[in-house]
Length: 285
Image 1 (cartoon, helix red, strand yellow):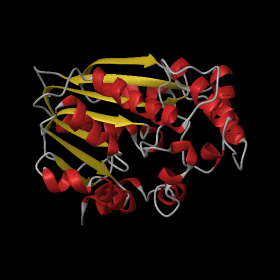
Image 2 (cartoon, helix red, strand yellow):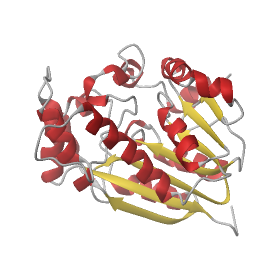
Image 3 (cartoon, one colour):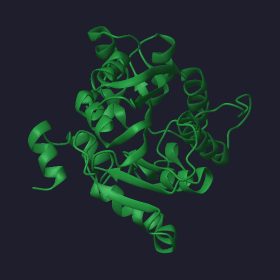
């Protein structure tokens, strides 16, 4: 039984919406996600009072990755794992701009990994020891104990089925003193909010279909703490995400209108975007 089969046996199959969107539907081909990073972007420094070009969109996506990698404290000579790597272009950015010794990109979707191998063919050929692409679940990772200095995930945690298992796996694969960072969107607060979950499902098809899950921020921060990780911190970066995303969407010929409700949901206080960081202790498990 390989890692994916074991994960499905323990946690259930990947939801059909997740499998379809990142498989045959190829979310990276949608105009909203030009550039292949498949994230909503960090729009700091990009003027929003005029037309936005594809180059602005791609810049926003890169900036979100840089914000996450900056939070880890530098990569020179270190080993990193990206959970939910998609096309692997974020892995390439980490190698090229942050001088990691190696980056392992992990994704549960074989179609995404095939695309990642094509997108990074030159890098894989030139430096196979620096970039590795593996299949695995966030809840049951194939790497060994203490294998990485850094673990990061950019806009994938909203899909994870078991945040407690994800947190335990992060703690396991990090070396003592290693750091992790997660960027994704959650319901503000520590407790489940059925009202927010219902409203998000009514407004946003990605929640209605089961692609995204309306979990409170505290579900992740609490899971990281319970896994024994230290220095658990969460920073709202929604003000740098949602207005810019919506401004870009405004300029697209969208076939559906529901994506414009992300900004509305943020303004109504039922959804926000966060950067969450934590560290593995040096004096214990």
